[in-house]
Amino acid sequence: MTRPKDLDPSSNPRALLGCELRHARERKGISQEALGAPLFVSGSFIGQLEAGTRRMHLEYAQHFDEVLDTGGFFARNCKAVAKSKYPDHFAEAAEAEAVATAIRQYATLLIPGLLQTRAYAREIFRAYHPTATDDVIDTQVEVRLERAHLLDNPTTPLLWAIVDEAALRRTVGGDAVMAEALRHVAGLARKHRIIVQVLPFEAGAHAAMEGHLKLMEFEDAPPLTFVEGPNMGKLLDDPATVARHTLLLNLLQAAALSPKESLALIESVAQDYEHGEQHP
Image 1: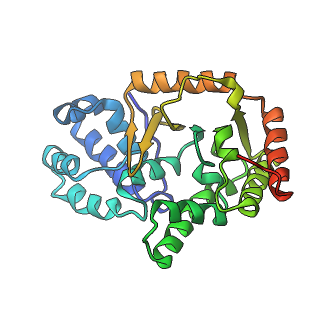
Image 2: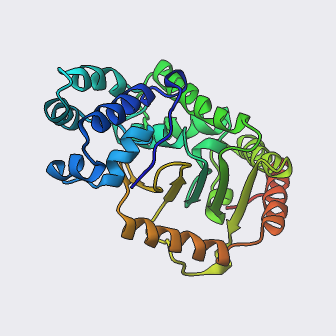
């Protein structure tokens, strides 16, 4: 059973709701497993709600109010907590990311969002939304850069990124944009803020050719995995799926260049862009 800790509501928009859920459940003498069973969710999922790593949806809130006799408290407040500046398919993952102690991910064709520069992110969003106004693109860029403030903390979360060589070679926004983007990643690695590995083309077929992977770990809750595609994404806590994705990431780490070799390649490709010599 997950053992949630007391959280500071001011640091996590779902912390107050999670703390109140735990207190209401314990007051009624109901276990996490028993509370989740009618909703077909695990006790671990209830623990994640209490720990603030998962978002409380309205159908769950209504059930909690009924079972825990809380007078509509959860239904009223989950609507406010559900408001997000992120797209619907990514909101819950972004909120979980913000409280993770470790993030491991594999990126196939682009530099991971937490590591992107302003110019690189702008080019990505413009490609995603070719008819959007500049104001819309500006907002999306600012939200992405705000996410990157996670890395302002010198140690937490641990970010371990495995980046496909294709992300280095695909010219996004021109040589100057790519040179800056890769220098930024290299700088974070040289400051020992992140661990980055490059999966080279020469690795051939590998365990995650079907797409992007992200695994998040937490201090007081089970790990979560996030899978995504164009305008869709899903946060999963199924232990078998998490175990499978953990294995995939371990295999990718083994197939990738070492962090030292990866840094050398990233800086070499950045230098090629700076000299106009990079040919994807």
